[in-house]
Structures are given as C-alpha cells and as structure tokens.
Amino acid sequence: MKVSTSPCSPSVLTSPDPDRWPDIVSPRRASRPRTAVAERVVRHALGRLPLRVRLAGGESLGRGGPLLEIHRPEAFFRRIGVNGLIGFGESYMAAEWDAPDPVAVLSVLAGHVAELVPAPLQRLRPLWAPRQPATRANTPDGARNNISHHYDLSNELFALFLDETMSYSAALFRGFPAEPSLLPAAQRRKIDRLLDLTEAGPGTRLLEIGTGWGELALRAAARGARVTTVTLSAEQRDLARRRIREAGLEDRVEVCLRDYRQVTGEYDAVVSVEMVEAVGEEYWPVYFRTLEERLAPGGRIALQAITMPDDRMRAASATHTWIQKYIFPGGLIPSSRALEENAARAGLRTDRRARFGTHYAETLRLWRERFHDRADEVEALGFDATFRRMWTFYLAYSEAGFRSGYLNVEQVLLVRPESR
Image (cartoon, rainbow, N blue to C red):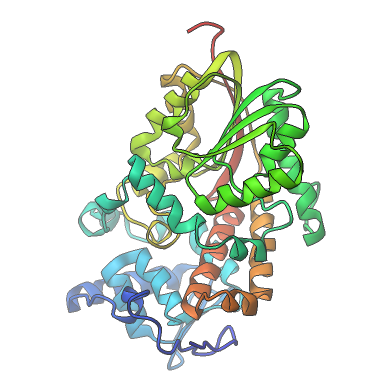
C-alpha cells in the first residue's frame, strides 16, 4: 500500500486491508440531515478559527494561519457527521485531509476545543457522542487486552523512535529547543527526580507499577534499591528482563507480568509513571487504594501523570474518543483534581506537585520527527501506510495538546500517615 509523500497533495491510500481497517475502508454512512448539520457546524467553526482551510475546488475558510487542506470534503463532513472527532481522525487516516504542519493545525483546534461546538449542541453531547464499548472495561482480563493492544505491537517499532533509554513518557530538559542527542539525559533526569521524591537508596523496597522497558527499575537498582516492577505487556517484560540481565542487576530487580491489583507485600516506596491514564475512571479508587495498601508506614509514592482540565475530563469520561479507539483502549486522562480527590479517599495526602507540560511537547516532537525520518524502517517491520498515518496523527495530536496547554504532565508526591 502506498501513500503520496507530499504533505498537502491529495494523498490516496490504495488497497488498505479491510479486515485491519474496516472503518477506514467502509465508513458507516450518516443520514443526510446529520451530515448536513455536521457540515454546517464544522464550516462555522473552521471559519472563525485562526486557520487557513482550503477545500478541494478552491473554497477557503478561516481567518488565516496554519494550512489545513481538505481533499475530499464530502467524505470529510460525512465521517464527522457519523463519529464526530473519531471521524475527524479517521478522515486523516484515510488521507481525506492533510496539513504541512499538522501540529500547528491541531494546536489551534485544541486551543479552541471548548468553542468548536455551539453550547446548545454541547448539551446534547450524550445523545450524539459514541459511548465507550463495554468490552474495553479495565477488568483484570480487559486491562491485559487493552495494554497488549498498544504495548505489544513490537519492541522494534518503539525502538525506532524512542531513545536508548526506551523511555515512553515525558522527559525533563534543561532548555528549549531540545536536541535529539539530549533526550537520553532528559529521560534519566526525569527518572532521577521521581526516585529522589521517594528517597530511594540502598535497601529501599521499591514497587514500580508499569515497568515500561525497564529504565526506572535499572536506575533504582543502581542506587541500591530492591525493585519489584509489574507490567501487563509481555513484550515489555521480556525486553526489560534482558536489559536488567545485561546490566548485571538481576539480583536486585524482579519483573513480573502481573496486574497491579494482584501485587502483594509492603514497600517503602512506590513509583508509577504515566500508568494511571490506562486505569480507567471506574478503577481509580482501586488503583489508589492499592497504592496505599502496598505502602509501609511513612512511605512515599511518586506518580507521573498526564492531566487535563477537570471540566473537559468530565465531558470526555462517558464518550468514546479516537485515542481510545485506535491507540489506548480503555484509558482516560485524569484531571489534577481527580488525582488528588481519589488519593485523599484512599488516605493519601498530596505533598508536592510539579508540572512540566512544555517538556512533553518537546519530547513528542523528537519522537514524531524520528518516526517520520524512519518511516521506511517502520514499513519494513510490517506496519502499513494507514498505520503510519494513524501513528503520525497520534503523535501530532498529543504534541498539540501539550503545546496548546490543553494537556499537562505532572509529578506528584503522595504520603500517608505513619499509622493506618
């Protein structure tokens, strides 16, 4: 399958696999009235934004700014009429629209998200927005399937765009713009700050919920901590174990394929990096109760979490999004308020908080550029053009969220009283 390499040409994906991409190949059709309403709403929104929107046939919309080219307007409006923002993302995957700078376009949209849909229609959101599938609930079995959907794609795929630390979370830079060569040090700086929050050192019993590919466990063990780290990704477990073995730290680190709800024992410190987003709102109370139950008296918990405004989180919590459908099924980004309230209900006090969303935007930029530069290698791994457009949209969409301030990322220190 081939796709035009020019970012603003009318790219056409040829012969995508209908079994792999059913909603891209054969999108559900909207009724004429629904499509007409969607087109009217979208045209009105685009016309008021600082964008330069160019439709096939020569029509233009917007007040000037980053260029968005709609190659197939009829299909574009129809997809949005059926699935709202899911349809917007699927339209990009189908190459029905494009942009020379997708991050700039998506940053404008993210910065105006609250005003894209008129208030009367926003109140009707429960009637038209798709609901989250019950099959994606984060039960123990469901969580394993949801995590596998993303993290078991291929260790080789992630290695193509991540740095040598294989860290898949926000890095912490000393200055901007960040150079690719500085990413490994910035990732280790982020990890060290988390470990410093927990005061991890020789003899510390440390639990990590969400192993990733093992960099935090390696750095904690190098400090002399005894680490138990759990993941639901078999691919991550296997590579983390290999890296730990090659570092000669097997005697200090145990990597388990285990749900956080199945962890037993007591620990002086708990660290969890960008894992709470995958827990699901229904299970946040269980997650924080587990943190509290696993923590020794006087222990410390360091979390790193992506956050969004509380009102937007509430609006999104009951609906199905493009990110949930294609990238992180079952997930929901919490608000700072939701984190603090759920922690408090579990008997944990928020002691410290530091936000660094602009650093995540830079991290994502470096990943996105590297993914783009190594597109041929991604294809050689067996990932087709539709997947590559999907992944490009995901990275650009995420970067835009942080650049616009719609998303943030924070490190939080939680403590609990000396006695229960």
